[in-house]
Image 1 (cartoon, rainbow, N blue to C red):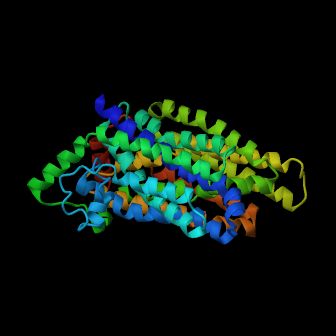
Image 2 (tube, rainbow, N blue to C red):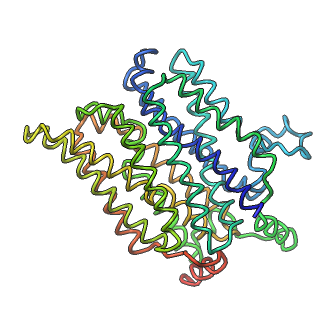
Image 3 (spheres, rainbow, N blue to C red):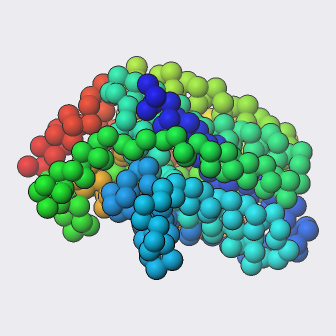
Length: 433
């Protein structure tokens, strides 16, 4: 019980913090552009550079957690600046990862130009990329099979609560004040880190490695027949989760509302209200109906939301039923964000953390994390340009990607509810043998 409480405490602070930073650029857009005079291109860099930082974090996340453990993953600088920390081998520097968050928020708070904003956003992204892998893996390894989906869903639903909180509060405070609020969970995380034990499965894995002196954990081995099916599922889920326009909605929601003729304040509040019950439903239903069913329902809802949003802009373009198009756009955004919260926000990471065998989890986790953030970067960086080209076409393309996601989940993603990690790994590796 203590182990589970520690894991949830750890991830509660992380997940509250990371989606606050993901939603930040959407709420801060008008204020930052007005105060600092940024161009659309400069703000596009600010919005997307977090995903670039997350890719850097993703590259090192899997190997780092295997080498130094889930608990000591915060010792990032030990392996990137070894001379600096040469004499810190016995010091449990659990708080170092949190420096990325704190430095990032402080840089944004005190920014007077684009370069410091971008530096802060990049720092947040590196911490974000590390966190997205470590949190689900740690929880999957410490929780029993009968409540694993529930506990992981609750912990990862903190992303939605963080986003909802950001949308509510950010509608009424300045962008600097919102950055100060964003720094608070990172400071609280410093205290929580001192009470977190290491993953027992990782400790067993390290002990076995010492005895056997061999491992399948390198990138080339992932493409062996034994692991190929697992890699396809993991990478595919990451593509499905991020190529459906999520970063466009999250990072530039105010632009969507303004162009559709909707009050941004009203839109943010409604999105916050819609997301919370969706996350609660996911936690309640995930161990009853399974990961696969909820993922398909979520992707179908996202497809509908993108289609309705695109349809509203199409009606504006052809000058039909223009008085109803803002309402249709609002409904589309709400359906999309509510559907995302219902499954796609949490479950892909839950499934990936469950299906990856521990002997290749480092390399496979790094690959999945990197693909996730690369796709996020592509969407976030291109959204402004594609939206300027054609709002209708942009959202119809996203709807098509959501439709692809439904087909991929139905065809390839296995059900993992009610099974131990060892049972899942044995069944998936047996398929390709």
